[in-house]
Image (tube, rainbow, N blue to C red; front, top):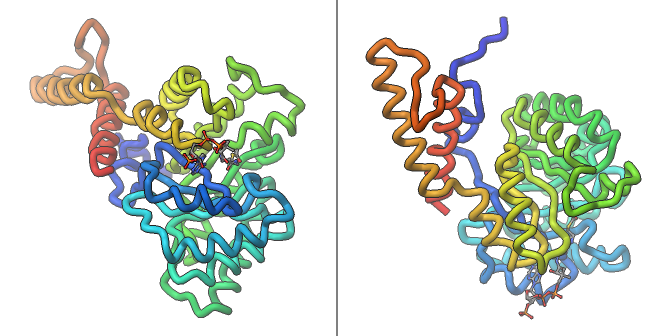
Length: 319
Ligand code: 1VU
């Protein structure tokens, strides 16, 4: 039997104590020591030490060495310390994992890019297990974020998440925690051109949000590459948060605060939600179902949305 609890919304996901808020997910190229040295002064929720697309092919070894070294040195504070390795299909992921797992401190989260097929998640799981065994790593269990960056990856997303969840639940090395949408690779794959309106990725973003949330996962929105245009960033961030994304990728420190504000409930929203919940309880106590509040019809779905806002505000307050 499939049970559906009354609160089977992201409410349960946000109420979970292990929820790691990742509003602004900032990439730092592993080959760039100057940028790596700035990490401690950056206030992103999630710092991604990148071995993949931010690093030139002939600098991959340099990036691995830098990341291995910096993992042991940098104070990440309350930021989620994350490494993005290369994809399974790149054929170079094993070298990334070996360099990272040699570090004196291991990352809290691993991002696996360009997951197109279920077999890739299986291969990654087995490879991680083998390397941990070789290096006698026992207790480490990072969060895993998988990326959707192609049309086939989008079609296969449900199967990939289903398999990763099964593997997570049967004692594998990671805890499946999120999905990330790579819009620029996706556009290249479908032959689209990124526009200001973003209409070319609208369907994909909705599908990624829906599929990820069905598995109670965080879901991280596309990057805005025009990093000087903070007005446009504000607009796309508010749009992404409204669509159900839990955070957004950023490439430049100036983008961090704009994204963080958009992905945090405003004081007005928190006041609205607090009052709505109180009124809902009063109406239930009086035996009433739907009621009018600020001119709107309120029933259970609105209560759940209000609870999402309150839970998110509590999580964000700890940052
Ligand atoms: O003021 P300072 O000179 O001391 O520092 C500069 C700059 O070094 C620093 N900075 C960064 N620090 C850490 N992480 C970063 N990502 C970062 N970006 C910049 O901030 C100060 C001001 O920088 P700037 O305005 O002079 O900008 P730059 O010309 O130095 O750098 C611009 C780019 C875009 C090259 C830089 O921000 C960057 O490398 N970003 C990351 C690119 C990346 O990782 N791309 C791949 C991930 S996106 C993806 O894969 C899509 C799914």
